[in-house]
Image 1 (cartoon, helix red, strand yellow):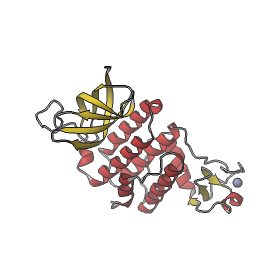
Image 2 (cartoon, rainbow, N blue to C red; image 1 turned 180 degrees about the horizontal axis):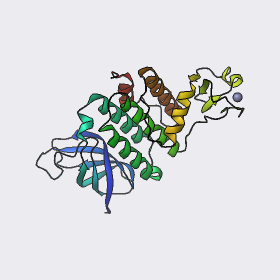
Image 3 (cartoon, rainbow, N blue to C red; image 1 turned 90 degrees about the vertical axis):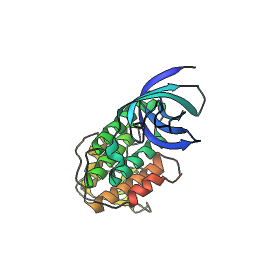
Image 4 (cartoon, rainbow, N blue to C red; image 1 turned 45 degrees about the vertical axis):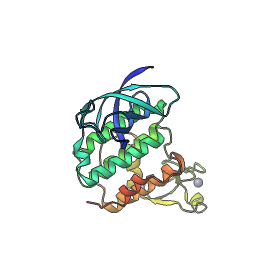
Length: 252
Ligand SMILES: [Zn+2]
């Protein structure tokens, strides 16, 4: 049975039977993996109490090809990121990002998805207020771009006519980008995208680490736009529960 050591971040955890836990890990080499950690509920066990949600380290896995659930034999925690679990706004943002990564990341995109998740989680440990939402939106748009789903933000996604960058544009989810006035009139449900929002999405997709301090109204509009875009182009149709909690959470 192949033994693999890989960098990993805990995306999700739940108890299994009396003494074990099941973890969902974002791994650098193998994409998202579900792993069974026998004895992980014992505080004195080999996994220790530092192995919890959002922690990062080196995971040792027994990998059986074709299985949905692998076996975790060890995990050396490098960063526990307790700062994320102790603050509700950071926690809900990190949980929404975790949910999204679980849905969309395949082995092909494992290294870049791991690095984006790592960067966002690290930034969230010291982020406060509007920076929490901005940091998370930035990472998620970068992930969308790396997965090859970038929306068209320069010319009309339907007819390729130029779209004025200095004026609000319509954003059509089905077309996958901004729309000229003519195509917009035939696109029900198109969202209005102000120039600043378009600039922000372009910067986020390019991986620029500038995090605009988004006012609440703009931040919420960005959350909704990205959720709708993900639903159209990237994720399956199951409701994203952690995302819903993030979007509906208190703004501070
Ligand atoms: Zn058009």
